[in-house]
Image (cartoon, rainbow, N blue to C red; front, side):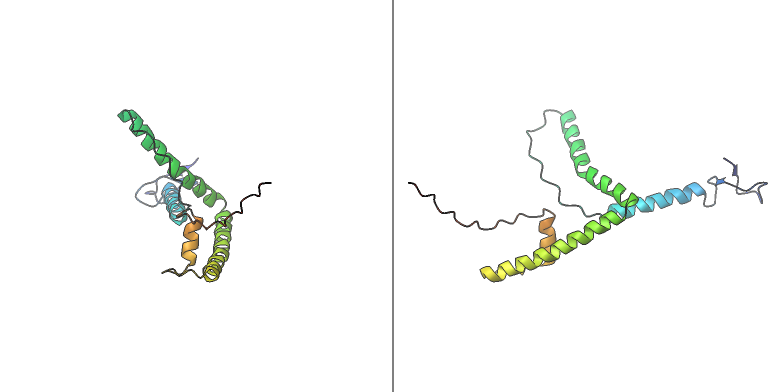
Length: 155
């Protein structure tokens, strides 16, 4: 690979790669582009609420405490790293998922509004798209009253 120092006026042959001196080099452009891509994909992803881990017994020593913290950090960070890679290499996929999630959320919001009207529920707040999206992400649990089952006939 041919390189040249940018302080010279003109290289003898056409440059292929510019080293990083006091001007913007090829590597500087590549690293800043990668940093922007990393930060952008990290900030646009809003993944579901992670499931709550089952509480364990108290750690017996510092090594076990450290191991648990590292596992918890990896367990919560790994899905975001995977989706970052998917977003970088296949940007249409997260866009399609977001459109599908919004479409489902709008449908569920209408269903919940109908449910409130039919059951004549008098809540302080009206059900909105924000509630639906948060529920779909696993933010809170919705329990519906189950109809009572008739007792089986003995005979």
